[in-house]
Length: 230
Ligand SMILES: Nc1ncnc2c1ncn2[C@@H]1O[C@H](COP(=O)(O)OP(=O)(O)OP(=O)(O)O)[C@@H](O)[C@H]1O
Image (cartoon, rainbow, N blue to C red; front, side, top):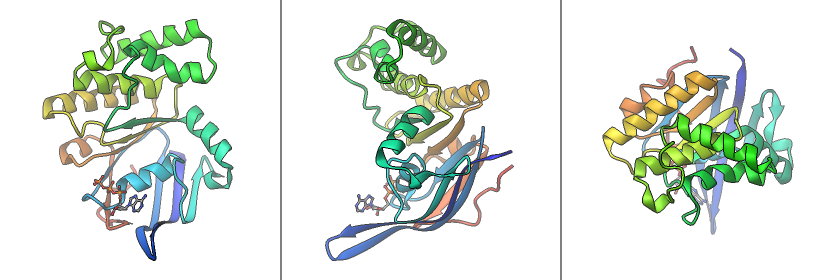
């Protein structure tokens, strides 16, 4: 299996006045194409920080990240923004849907921003909303949807540009256990159908165990009990 992402000696520090907080302390990690990875660890371990760097939302303080063999952070901010929108789908705990737009419009939005033709964007959005089981909720606004439905819309929105990599940060953090299970089942189904690569931050060990690989972070480092690549 070829490596999609390779992380070597990754460190991230934050300056807090006179103090420097070391959040990531030398991460080495390879993520293969078409695999699912759970990123677990205690609160404050650095999971979100690592996920944000994998998704080129933030730059490392030192170390290297390559995507398909190319140095990610040798690119300008503009190039990174293009890379993100063409390659990566993001799902966050709080879905950040636009409240005044319908489910359909929210899902179409990234395609319209990417200057896709409106009719084609709508067709694709309808199809993806169908895939996530929301064909009967197309015209509902986020406030008229349940938490689980809102997160399905957010997943559909993350997928509309057909990203190669889906990064999710506690995507079911504010949902009940049953709804969370259903969302993860959906993510696993999407992965099998599309072959997309997924990295998901979760606190839920049961859910983590459903991923092909579990990477454990402790205090800015990867624990050796992390499961190896298959
Ligand atoms: N912008 C920032 N400035 C300063 N410190 C930060 C910043 N972002 C994160 N940190 C610190 O880095 C550490 C790791 O944060 P991060 O959000 O990556 O942890 P996490 O493992 O995702 O935690 P949680 O499970 O609680 O979301 C925390 O101690 C946090 O306070």
